[in-house]
Image (cartoon, rainbow over all chains, first blue to last red; front, top):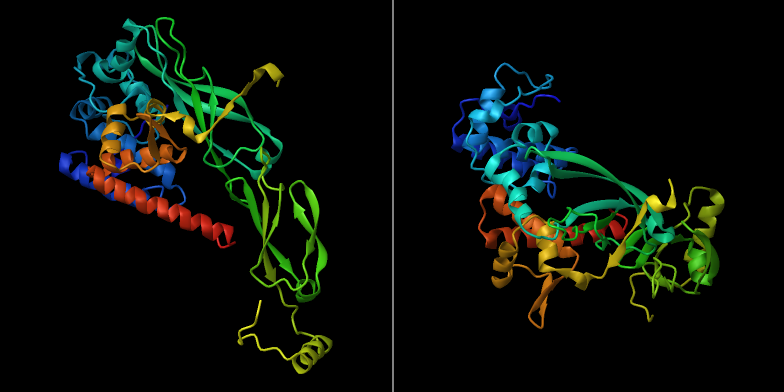
Length: 317
Length: 102
């Protein structure tokens, strides 16, 4: 386990005041907020910043960290001496075992034994019958996973109270069947895969929130799939049957005669599976062939000459 | 991988999320969630016969509001305003992606 320099993470001196730490944290929280940050590693940085702040903003944890970290450099192999925390009175304000699970192993090793808060939150529940807590995680899927169903391996960091009253963080690996037709924003419930219950009460559930990776051509809108379909001017004007490549294979689609650019065609039942299944929505985009040969220019010139067409004059649709 | 090692989940309909489930999944106290509901800061919920139920979007909303309140010591109304703006941004980004500009 590597030593983490929380002062370096927040960019403050070791003798920084509480106000300086708060100011530094807020500046970084704004910079790396995952919703707005343009930094490529924003999510990871935000986790590190939160962890550093959780320690340095709490006088008890900061004092323990300062004592333990003397002489260590960032990245150096770190192992706290047994019983190092014996001299500290922890009131344990501020965060829960689950929040601790979001932090690093270094954090869990240092503060896993803290009496009133992290461990206490677990211990208090052992005195009576209580259903375990529900866990929550995100699962990132491809559109193909929803079309065909899939099995995904999911790694979870789960806090656990050992026999000595210490909170440790385990990694659990689950193989989960993704049901066909799942949509972004939906939640998959895995009964009994959350925190174990106490006193014989049932375990909590694991709630998996579904997100989709962006697809090169397809977008998901509820149960509907949507894509742009490029067509040639003569296909749009005269009507045609064109092949549309989809993850499930090619689909033959009739383009109606006189189709205008921007029009949307709907193919019922070709979206995400379900009852009822979603639709496939095709946004028509007319692509002009380049006038880059004498023959192409001649054809355009013929049209210009022989078609009484002014695109800026309102037409009846 | 053997078939019996694979967990099969059930797909929750949006209306199945209870107040306790949202609170536990987002690591907030149910009382925190109730306060925000009472103050009208949580649009992804409705009360049916006195029981609150939540859409899937409530998970992201609750996490965002909690994070903004905690990180910036923001009052709940300001956190809700920022969450509204972020949701608007999400919707606009989704429209851009659907239009092939994402």
